[in-house]
Image 1 (cartoon, one colour):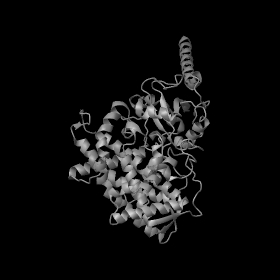
Image 2: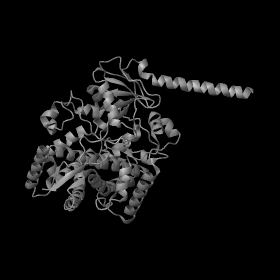
Image 3: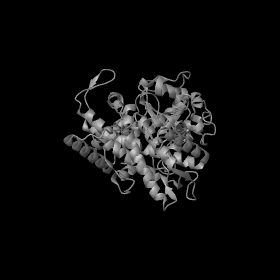
Image 4: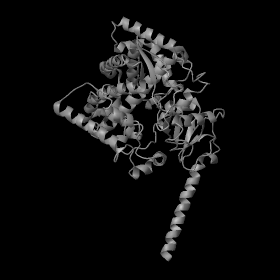
Length: 506
C-alpha cells in the first residue's frame, strides 16, 4: 500500500509539473503583454491546419489581424510553441541581415542518425550548417550554372516538342501536370544524370515520388506539430521526418548512381558530379581558409534530396502561376513574346545563357509571379541570444525563441504593394524596386541564409517560360479555375485540381 501511495504521489507530482509547464507555455505572450490571439488547446494558432485552411491562409489571416497594431512582432502559437511573428520590415532586416549571427539557425527538426535525408542544408543549424553551406557554395556559382544551361534547354525543347504533339488533338491542356513533368526531368537529369522521361511516361518513378514528397507525411498533424514544437525531444525519441517509401527510393537512386559513376569513371558535368567530387576530396579548403573533410555519402544523399524538392516543385509552381497570370493578362503575354522574339533574333534564334540577362521584362514577370504566389508562406529563424527590438524596449525576442517572417503576407501588404492581388510586372522595374527595401520581396529569403539554389531556379524558370511563350499562346478555357483553389494538405502554395489552359501554336 505504501509503495502504491508513493507512486500515486509521484504521478500526481509529474502531472502537476507537466500541467504547469504547459500553462506557462500557452500563456507566454499574455504574461509579456505581447499582442496575440488566444491559442487552441493543442493546435495553438494553427486551427484548420491540414483540413480547410492552407498554411499560407493561416499566416495571412494572422498578419491581417494585427496589421494596425504597429507592434514590431506579435505572438503566434505554432501548435504548442510560442513564436515571434514579425510585422515590421526593419526588424526583418535585422533578423535576416544586420544581426544574422544571432538569427542564423532555423530550429527545425532533423535527425541525421535515424533519418539522414532530413539533415540537409535547409534544416541544419549551427556549425553543421555553416560547414555544409561553405562546402556547397562552389556548386551554385554562375559558372556552374552556365555549364548546366544546355542540359536545361535540351529538356525544355523536349517539353515544347511534346506540347506541339498534344495540341494537334487537344486544345485544352492541364498545365500543372505538364510543367511538373518538365521540372522533374530537369532535376533528374541535372542532379542524378538520369533520363527520367516523365514527359513521355506518366508512370515514371521520378514523377511519382516527386509528386508525393510534399504531400506524404510520416506522421499525422499532432505528431507533426510535436516534432516542430519540441525538435530536440523528438530527435532523442528517434522520430523521423521522411516517409519510408520516399527514403528508400532516393537512397537507392543516389547510392546506385554514385557507385556506377565511381566504378566506371562516368562524368556528366552535372550536380551529382560536383557532389561526388566533394565526397572524394579528403580535404576541402573553404573561402575563409579553413580545411575540412569532404562530404559523406549520407550528406550527398541529403543534398540530392533537398535539391530535388527545392529545384522541382518551386520552379514548376512559378512557371504554372506565371502562365496562369499571362493567360488572364493577354497584353502582358504579348509583350513577353515580343521581347523573347527580339532577343532570339539578336542571337541567331538560339537561346543562350547570355540571352537571359536581356529578357528584362520576362524577369519582371517572374519576380511578380514570385511575389503573388510565393511557394513558402513564411521564413523560419531562431534566436541564439536575447534580442531587444531596437526602438521597442518592451518587445524582446528571448534566446531560443522561434521566429516566423510571414513572407507571403508581406508580399500582399497593400502599404508595400498597392492593389497587392493584381498582377503588375512593372512593380519590379529597376525604378520601382529601388523604392523598396530588399526584404519586401522574400521568395528566396535574404541575407547569408538565402536560397543557395537561387541562380539555378531562376535559370530553369526563365528558360521554360521563354520557350513556352515563344511557341504557344495560352488563354482561358471554360475549365480554367478563377480564382485558383489551393490544397490545404500541402505545406506549399499548391493548386488543388490543376490548371487547365487553352493552348494554341503561335
